[in-house]
Length: 344
Ligand SMILES: NC(=O)c1ccc[n+]([C@@H]2O[C@H](COP(=O)([O-])OP(=O)(O)OC[C@H]3O[C@@H](n4cnc5c(N)ncnc54)[C@H](OP(=O)(O)O)[C@@H]3O)[C@@H](O)[C@H]2O)c1
Image (tube, rainbow, N blue to C red; front, side):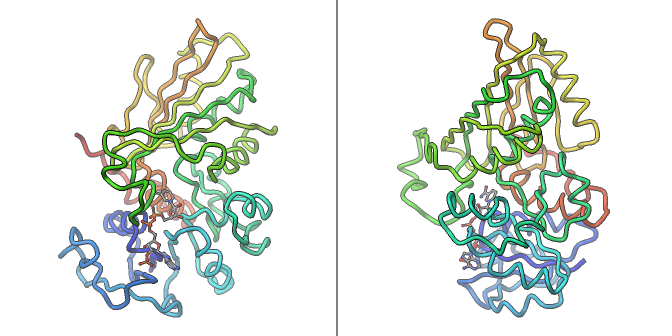
């Protein structure tokens, strides 16, 4: 399969490029940038020196997309919605890592403050939370990859949302991310002296992942769900840790809940449920496509605590995007993705 990456000079794009090297069935043929034309990719990312048999050079012209079977979009919001309709109409498979196709028309306008993609393409897009929507992903040709926080949060919540064991409107998601979540561009908020030795909450009540989590949590639960969601920036490069608190409506022990999660994810090779008393940290999934989940039903407070960790640029972006393409192609979902996390 011949693929292209648009947004190849960014963090998610370069992670798609890194991971595709291990993929036996995909050839990366084109890399796009809107700012650099004719520049070898290794100049933008020197760690890619001598990695490819044939030098990859950044190209700009949109028409050069011709001759590819699939395109990954790793662009800021507002870009892929301009490109994807024509590509889909031309029969090219599209995987969008941005948020352009994750919401409906009204929610996109409200939360992204931009004009949405034409509604027929929004309706056609399949939400690629692979572990939950595998059957739909198999049929997709326009795949909208989940956001990084929604991936960690929804995987942490999905099994319990399917039960009547919780009060569904008591969900609090306290999430923390490493700074690569903000992309490669420099900004005051991600400046070293602003970030180092610091911990801060940001985008409270206005984060664009709120409607995404609520939309798909409601779909999974089969009833409307609202969540309290806070995001924090942590002085580390990669990783997301979501601590989720939910009121238990039924008296349940931790071991019963762990069994529920293990059963729900028994065909999901990238979700690892930790044994009782073990809680994952971000380093334990670093640079891998795993989502690790630890659980505690606290008998004292009657709350369920869920710790869900991912690498934001792998399971939260590039890795999950490739996992989805694998499913769309009918290949084993782990193809090219079974890397052990890097530790320490
Ligand atoms: N970082 C994460 O952890 C993460 C996780 C999940 C999802 N995402 C989503 O993935 C997307 C990319 O995020 P990122 O963190 O990789 O950002 P990034 O590092 O800032 O990269 C953005 C890329 O988009 C390109 N770009 C900018 N304007 C463009 C335009 N008009 N046309 C075509 N390309 C353009 C940029 O390259 P040029 O300027 O060279 O064109 C760059 O390669 C975002 O939508 C983000 O929300 C990110």
